[in-house]
Image (cartoon, rainbow, N blue to C red; front, side, top):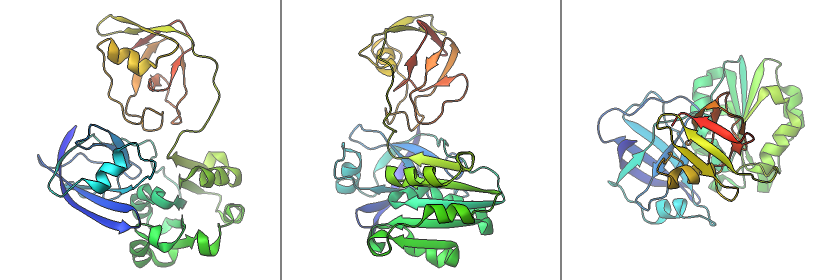
Length: 299
């Protein structure tokens, strides 16, 4: 974890505040467009937020937080109780949504989904264009800033006034060597997935996709470094079983979308239930399980 001080907190749109975090112990860890971090407010909750500042600025991080009226305590605490000068712990940046090399980019953002796109659009230069959707201009953080900086490379769509853009038409006009990056509500991502080729579309979700899996079964996890064997019962997550056995694993969302609990798998067959697409030899124990009776992990 890194230690920061809340340098500035200010409203930037309806129900959205911007947080600028200054490194308390010197330069902060580097990051690349698409990265996010875990922020741990004093209420013992950990939440994930996309970095939306300048990657070249090693002195400060910037994130934006929308107040969720169904908040489980994270956004509510930040909006109502967090004050300038407060020490805050943050994780090292992680990137599950990297900007891959391409000759052109179309960025699609909905609401607070604009946050990872800010650094991406900056990095893409003239090769990138943005379509930014929101109910109204008042609800859309950074809209004025984006139009002032990028002009006609940015299209602001107020859906209450303009309706939703035609993603099929956008797909038809997309150059063959361009990639599409999309972050926003589930309905927007579903529309993008229906319109754009899967091999050119990259998405980041707020919530996991609802899917059906086989019934849970019990299995054993062997912690390779200690030699301990931990039983994961059918009614328990692997993450919790490890924690209760004295092998806590860092975690954040507990929904398989942030990547903070990643473990290396040395043998056995994981049953991947995450939305990140775990790399070979990796798994996320907050949601994933095992199809083999025994799983060996680097722990």
